[in-house]
Length: 133
Image (cartoon, rainbow, N blue to C red; front, side):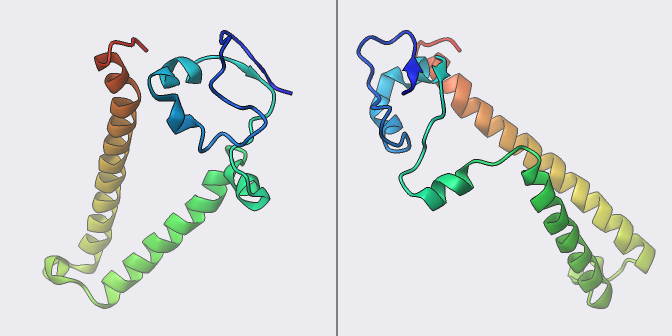
């Protein structure tokens, strides 16, 4: 049995999966998400979905770094074999430099966009509603 703190009239049924109960919290979500819970939280009803919803932090880079490297290699080899219209005028050395530049620009843009949207919707929206993070 999970122990929760600070709520006498707990809106969550701790014996059921949490995924479909969280939207029902409404205005109490911000308060609920910042309180401690002692125990394992079950997110989904399906055993398979529950198994794949939780993983150690190091599994993400183990899976995604090879995928990104494979896609970069494939893109680079395809660009060398059949350059697209913006790279036709570049020499072979310039194409590899251009690929590196595009990669770092994309990583920077994705990181800034992702971090901005996550932080905006997680913190700024709550403070606008009168709740300080």
